[in-house]
Length: 426
Image (cartoon, rainbow, N blue to C red; front, side, top):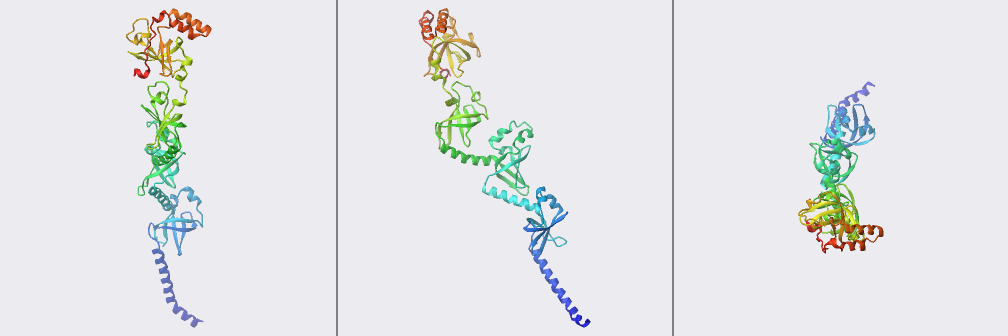
């Protein structure tokens, strides 16, 4: 039995050399198959307290260290199980034990970086949710990456929501947390872990598409809903949902106004009528007053010569007289000619009345087509009108009775009235 075993022992050294050569070839092949920063895929074969073992194929195994495991997002870390196919980055092709050192956390962020790089190259917009904020803007997560949207890159609508810049960040930006917004990547830097996003750029592109669609569908005469976005001295800009239209100062109200802010405020929701469209330039003319009945169209049915009414003094004009706003119809502005302020000679309206004063006046002339109503202060208390006023009230015959009184001596034979409107006075 011993002699039979001797030849086998003689062959063992050669066999051992062959086995070692094969192992060396396998080791060299395994090492040569991996390079630092290489992205690899594999299957989890073991999960331990301080490491995760990943089978990489070709009888190669990689180890994810405890430090890298801690760097994984908690939800990802808790969801891992044996048999999962995962991606990892090669941190070290071989450690002192001959294992490939891997990083799963880096692989997760790499996937997200590749995604945002693709978005940047294609200039593609995506919808994302605001996750937080800091003193300069809001934080949005794109995958596992944290992107930053500076306040200046928020859409005009969201910038209006922020309010005064002097307010603390929590009062300004907290209201945006949880809201979804369309964003585009405008700057990225992996080395500095910098990802800058813009809602303004994304909304501009979206609004352009909406604008083209809106311009192709609206017509003059359409009534639309909108939001006041900006107020200028000459008019108001209204967001119609994709395109801005403008209400000129003269289209805001039937009455004379000093400034558009007298009628609307930023953020107001308004109904407007489209009065003109320039499809080449994209300009849309709107009117607010077109949806409100014009009081001048029926003024001659409501007010007649000789009638008494109340009005508030709005402006004093040294040459033309006093402009007043009727108490019953605040959209109507009338004029008291200088000669109708008093029986005495008046050099300046300030000698008789002052702005804000409420007066009882007598109607002299109503001219709807010229949008004029002329009034008198000096004729209110003349005794010859007292009987006429009483008869008009008692008999409902104001026109005939009062006109008879106005044609009497009190008129001095002069029924002329200064024909001046607010526009003429300016």
